[in-house]
Image 1 (cartoon, rainbow, N blue to C red):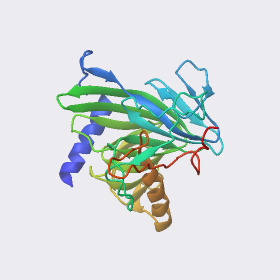
Image 2: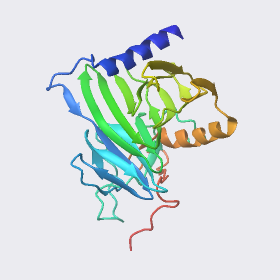
Image 3: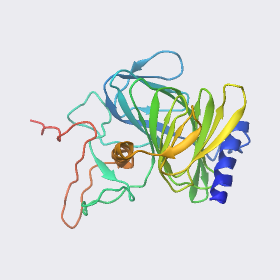
Image 4: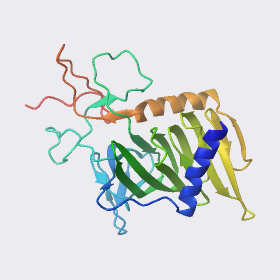
Length: 283
């Protein structure tokens, strides 16, 4: 556990003091926040102060922001550009997330005829949430990819599934009075610093908070713990909240890809994050 603490502490400190090495321009690649689900009221801005209605399939680069209204829910996948399948039923939208397949380690069983997709970073915005994508950098490192992801939670609450990645990568989330560093972890975070770590392959989440007296305190929130920023004391996640987190992360650890055809039985797997049933066949 000590090595995990040191590793996560290094990630967080590197983000705070800005000592992470920058990649050369020729090796750098743009990352995107691909919107894969929109429910309720939601909008986005490209950083120019103009807000537009948000639709599923939109790809947003660093510098963009998303905000949700009452009853708004938005799921985004972070990383390389995702080509979502084109919808012939909704020609006004270029892409729609009509088909998904499960991530290799998704806690869902009973489907044996699908080809797993690679796990990716995903974030769910809940109602009345504003999230900015400050950095979405990707850099080739041999056969691996180094990522530098920095989000800014300005209001509300997010749930995030952060994949396991190499030691050079970092993933941080800023809040008004602190910053969180994480890897290989499923967690929720509110704008005031409340954290729930559902599961982690990286030791947990490191949160640095500025206290009312101006001092800074660093917390390590380990799997199964809930941190109340008022008391500063981690406690076990209550069973009801744990079940809610489980349901959400089953959805977030799912990757949106084109419908799968299989040579041995030609089965098509259809699951929609937007509609309860497949769209009607075109007439």
